[in-house]
Length: 268
Image (cartoon, rainbow, N blue to C red; front, side, top):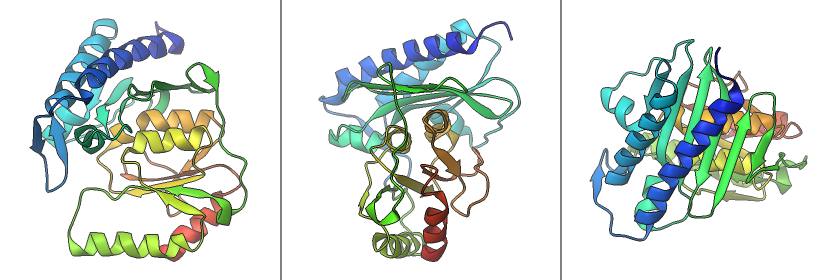
């Protein structure tokens, strides 16, 4: 491949920062909101940021493939090939953005051979930039990060997200699962951004994270690299291998994985 991964990262960081400036400028203004579903929101900023990011990346990598939440989700089909593919969530945490809750980020991941290789997650409101390159470590604002060393499930901080489905079966399944898990961990957080949940695992703020039925690979492509490079583990909540296209994910430090999988299985 002509370019190296450091160049991929550098250009992705530039794109994320540009989109981050747009988010920061719009954050305190009145939002023009549309509904994609009952509680799934999209704003003009989502589309503007996706266009900005894709245009920036395409200038440098015209032969790469692109998957974005707003463009690809609208088409309904996601095909991840072996080709270098940029997977972008222009505003992860749109509901937070609409409400002025500061857990909002740009998420840009690059897969090569279907494996996440480069990840950038930029929270412009809190001025935090998480980066990771496969085999080269993970960083927050340029400083190395690593997962927590917590080994006791009962002392662990767990994150999850409620998702967008509001049918009785989905809601009951989710609340029953939470009910069981709350007896096994110290406390629970739902910050409203899967990408920032994964970055929380990577820098040790969170110990455990799981989610079912999230939007698509754009929610986790960047965070997956950052978690792995910070010494964390990604896996399916069942304990199987993590599949970026499955819309199921769990993450933890290496000490907690087995106990976490056991707790997740008990909670189903």
